[in-house]
Image 1 (cartoon, helix red, strand yellow):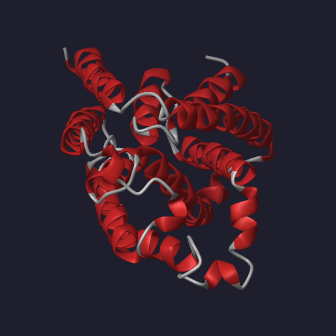
Image 2: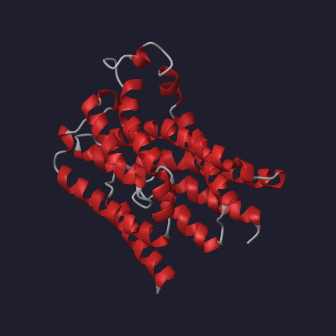
Length: 267
């Protein structure tokens, strides 16, 4: 397939899946294997399209990110603060740094992704089951999240280190299980994703940037722009979706995708 078309396809996949509870990493691994798009250049490309998705969230939540650079943004008693964000990302960053080589070596395959998709789907169903009928008791404002809830959401995020489990899926489900509404859990998930993904992307770029040539820059630019645009509208759609529907449909989609993935690669 033409490299520019690959850039568009992968950019669309990343933009659609990065912030939905369906595992963008899992989708990227599956699509990459289907298109034969792998190797060092593909690794750098994956990072660039993720940066495009990150930028879309910064645009959507620009006022809140700007607040983090003010005095109130550091006060944990005046709404969501930098400390709440740190509580949700520092633990998983430490574990990811230590375990990344093993994860990359043993868990980046269609089979492990299929397993992660199923387990993550079951977690979403469990979270919805545990909170059904208790919606009025859930924290419905991201500014009312406690430090304890932030830490627990960060702990649930450990599950996302398994490709296919989904970072947003594990944190939104974890948010429900610790007393957050879907909307509050999703907003917190998107906000903690930015610094976490930015650091991870910089780490990957430093390791792999030397593999690029000047001819690759156009492809990277296409993927970046496509991912940004698609992710922007994907996040806005998802936030509206959560006002009317639960996460069960995403769980069933994950299980169906796992079955198709296993059939395509192993049957």
